[in-house]
Amino acid sequence: MSNESGEIQRLRRTIEQLSDQMIRSKEQEERTLTEFSDMNNELVTLQRLLAKNNNSLEAARQQAVDAGDSKIAFIAGISHDFRTPLNGILGMAEMLKLSPLSEEQENSVSVIQDAAKLLLKLIQDLLDLSKLEAGQMRLELGEVDLQETINYIVRLLEPQVRKNGNQLSIDCDPRISTLLEGDPTRITQILINLIQNANKFTSEGTVRIRVTLVEDDEVTQMIRFEVEDTGIGISEEDQNQLFQPYMQTERGRSSEYGGTGLGLSICRSLVTLMEGRIGVDSQEGEGSTFWFELTLGKKDGNQSVASAQEHQGQDMDDEAPPVSVLLADDNVINRQLVMLQLKKLGINQVDAVVNGEEAIAAFLSKKYSLILMDYMMPVMDGLEATRKIRSIEMDEMRHTTPIIAMTGNVMQGEKDKCMEAGMNDFIGKPFTLEILSKMIEKWQQSSEPTEVLNMSIVHEIAELNTDGDRTLLGMLLDMYRTDTPGKIEALRRHIVSGDHVAATEVAHDLKSGSLSLGIRYLSTLFAQIEQFAKEGQSRKAEPLLDALLPAYQAACAALQRVSKD
Image 1: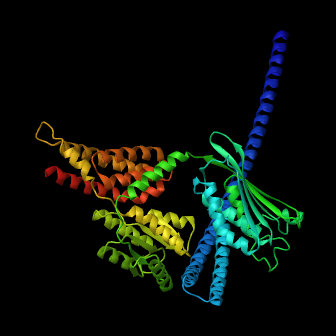
Image 2: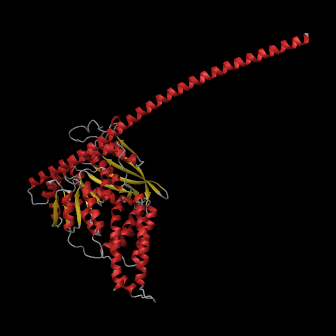
Image 3: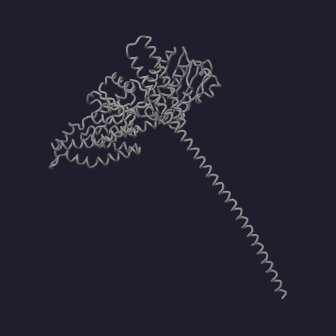
């Protein structure tokens, strides 16, 4: 019995120990659950705070974006409003200077031109700064011929340099490739700004431009640009803040020199955008050297030259007929100015209208060599008028008429809208007689369509009869009709999607097939699209797409007539 009692006592103690362990384990589990619950509550609270902060940040970000967009829109509007009267002032002054004037009158016109150009530069600087701050400045890659660029800048600025009693010298490294790839417009802008700065702070001295090769590999070259002057120099204190917006040296702020202090800031931003470096070496009283370094891609110059020669050969087939221009602009001063400029260029067949609706009516009643279309007009703006004209051309199988946008709003976004609407090119107000002349020459040379067919080739094919009842020309035409519409649609997709490689291949195939059948005009359209795609600029080919189907249909109809005959 005692053994049983002892066993029972041991079992009871074991049970009590197990119960005690279970109770402690349960308590630990409850504490763990409580701690987990507390942590989970804290996590939920943090998530709520984070979501609230995210909403606040998103609201702040959107507010900043909206503010930036409003700022850009405001400055773009102001730019347009300023550029329109400036176009009249500069244009009329240029026309006036071409007429017989006394020395006093010529000096007065020069003062007007200088003042208007200064105002235009201030507007452009403010616009560039706004685009850079908003991240809307985009590079436009293309061919860079540095020797040609330097020569252009020298021709442009040498009169200003001599006016200050300075000598302009150039030293260009012969090892630099003839053709490079980069943004030629921005490189030119930076160099002009630095040279004008050097000339402004130098008198009876020298402004020297150096372009040297720093690094060279198989695909790129690093180029160093230097603009050295013998002018007043810059103190070390001023150098540390020289590239900040609105910053000027103590002497630079004087009325003797003028300016806004934006030029160097814009130069720095543009160089940074091109992934380069910029700086200055100077001692007060001993001149300055502003420099920047860019890495530019190498380009196959021989191929580019050959392509250019090919296009020139196509344009020289026939003598161009007299140029007729449709001018659409609601501003009476601009209309009068452009008509005077056109007359000076020997273009007398000009019809002027004041809005888009009148432009469409004029287009329907007469054939024009090209159309100068203002962007902003009452009743119907230039974009809508262009869309309707392109639609009419497609419906009536007309050849496309070059449409050149004219506007004081030179924002990249506005240029894109013009191209998307079907315009061919863009000319910003104010523009000089030379700029207008080059624009007209460019599009007049490419706008006059060649004959639909090359009849010598067509006749050769027509004379090669087959053994059956059908002619070889008829059989080839049927094959062409079977394949071409699908290929044109594929080409359209590749161009719109920006697939440059595929677009190049399809355009080349279509061009070759068209040429083999003697289809002349349509093949030139395919050749132009192929060239744009090769250069990685498919967007520029988009306005040509609407001309393909009418040209294809016209070619097939002409071949059908020849085949029946």
